Length: 346
Image (cartoon, rainbow, N blue to C red; front, side, top):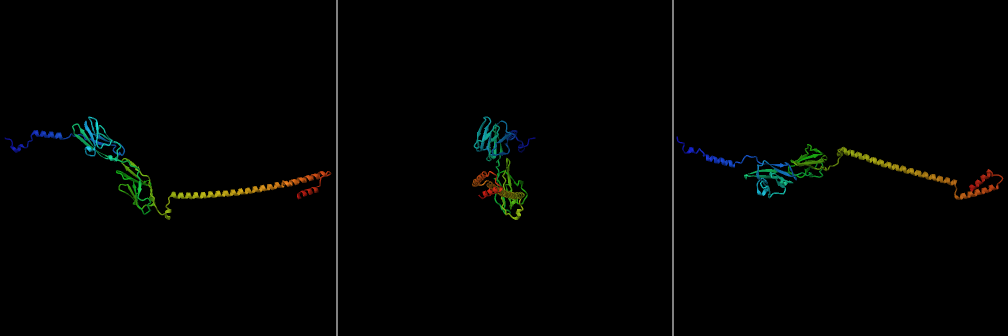
């Protein structure tokens, strides 16, 4: 039997063509090897810190490495390249003097800023001139400063005004929390938080809404709390409001009143003591003067003035003369009385 004619012969493919197709497929199909990966160390990078873009699963004996800023391999975005066989590093147009490329392909960026946030692409060139690429992402978080609470109304009126409190400046990837009187926000229809919780609204403020208020800002690398903020709520003092005084205020008033009474009593006692002491001193002085006067009078009675003493001496002398003349007998009592009377007359 003869073989089939023309159409049947087209079902067979020559072996030469099959071998050629297999060879081509083998040449263009890359080997199934692990792709390089990029790991950020530390995973959460804070502004001002040093960050490593650590390379893993790199092919053995590579020819060189190149790091690019962004997701594309473009010479204008080259940071630095390294050639293994010559141990030579070449810096590119976007090199900032803060980058260091190590022989294992790892890239170090020192003192990172928020401007360093973005994509970084690694290109690995193998000795057969084939290349592998991998892109990593770096996000730099700011270190939060102390937030400041800002109010839209510094002196709100009670039952009339609404106050809006804002926590610090707005930053990305930041969450916020609020406290009133060192406690979390109570459930109240007069309190409302914004969607990002950065703004707190107090409707129809009352004197009990004075605070203090504290807000907290938090991001993946830092936490910071504000200083206490107090509202100065303006309200009218009514008879009813006097009963709203706190226990501390009442105790302070009572203590002040007691202290005032004690001070007045002490002052009165001091004045009374001084008055009594003055009267006593005056009486003693009067008695002293009277005693001196009496003593002076007594002394003058017993000791007459100088003239009297002279006269008395003269009398005594005359009496002595009379005594010398009377040799027979002493004078009689009558004579003595007479002499005394005469002295008194003089």
